[in-house]
Image (tube, rainbow, N blue to C red; front, side, top):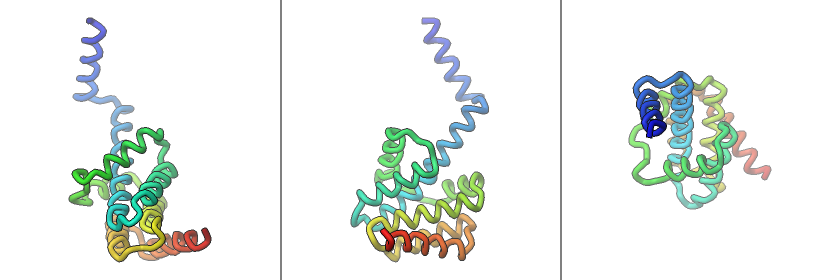
Length: 158
């Protein structure tokens, strides 16, 4: 009984005044969800081969983050739900701009291109969204184009 009460009290204190470790974990989780949400937005645009696109999202998330498989699958499934579609790019983009350095933003643009290219071609709507996100993330146009060319070269070599 006392143990249960103490557990509830700790949970309440962590909600009201979280420790720095809990704050860091929450921010990392928010960043992971932001990246996953943007990657899934690209996957949703041209759903001709959704399984390949989900696989590309999974590979990109594994490359950047150390997430257990079950958590990653749940995150991708959650981001893929119709009701969880992004209605605005402001929150994920603002968080990524706050936390990511230029090289990490370029990695994200390249990952977006890989998801777009997962079905073998880049749809005009996918191109438009990656271009828009690159602008919002303050990625230089040259880096945007180089990322696209790297992904296209890797796809032709494979």
